[in-house]
Amino acid sequence: MSGTQTLTDRYVAAVTRRVSERQRADIERELRAEIGDDADARAERGATPEEAEYAALAELGAPARLAARYAHRSLALVGPESFPDYVRALRGLCLTVLPVVYVVLALVDVAHGEDVWVTVFRPLGTTLTVAMYLAVGVTALFAAVDRTVAGVREGAGAGDAWTPDQLPLIEVRRTVPGWSDVIGTGAKTALVIALLVAERWISPVGDAAGRPVPVIAPALWHGWVPYFLCLAVLGVVLQAVNARIGRWSPVNAVLGTVLTLAGAAPLAGLFWEARVFNHALSHGAGALAAQGSWVSWLGILFAALVTVARLTEAWRGRPDRVTGAYVPDRGPSRGLRSGGR
View 1 (cartoon, rainbow, N blue to C red):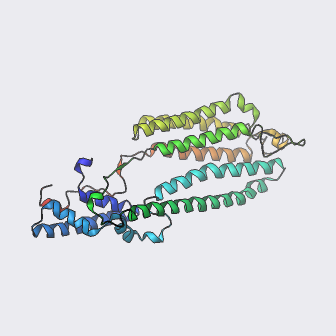
View 2: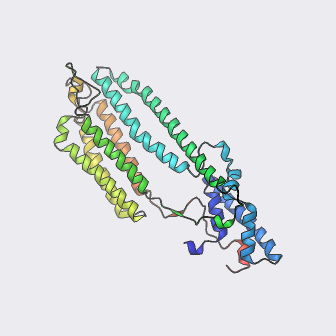
View 3: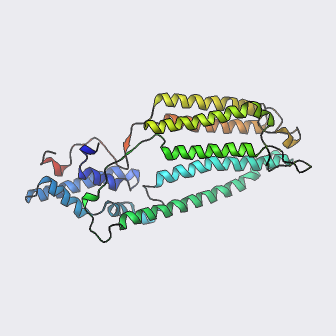
């Protein structure tokens, strides 16, 4: 792709990747028209097409500064360039941490003999507090990193004039998970495995003698827990294969669907039969031990939501797109047509 990239293409990509997606088409058209008019005027005064294009871009200045004027960057905590990663990180943490916090608190209430309304609604307050802290922490981290990176990019050449020679090549952003996503998923899977193993001996609930009571039913360790852990590890392996291939594959999407359904269907069945949580938490009675109780329905709803999220992720593949740039079908920019490029 780099052999067909013009300086104008690279400049437009460098600007539009830093603005919001809804602005990109209009900004690209405006930029190309402005660059083309300036290059045409310079060519009429005797400059070659290459010289005219180079000078027009040099006069516009550094793409980051121009994009900041378009995007009003100072008004945004997280800039458009970092926003997709910010949303992905925040969503991943919320989907991983918040359900665990809620379930643990609800199980503690069940073990203490609270009624259904207290068990369902009281953990929401603490869970929402944790969500707020997560949102503030992740936002502050990305805002700091975004401004640091932007400052380095815009200030690295503060003592030197910016030139179009500094324009990076247009990179291709793939819609499949990258290696950072694989590492993140692997870390979360390892954390879940560690928690499952640890909760057998370290539990937030204890019996009358003070001994820890496992949250997960011990009987599941004789078949179902190893089965689910194998599926989780296979999911990480499949994600690594996707990252290695570097493009969306229908075969991998089908395999991801099979793995997801192979986990969701039996998990929903176990929830319905009240076999997921340890009955000792409620002394063998109550909603935890009753088949088809509200706890069972809550577990089935959780399994359904996870299934929908995983299937959506597996089938959302689409062709590669240029990083940050709006790329409609177009001919050469007007400032280059006279040169036949």
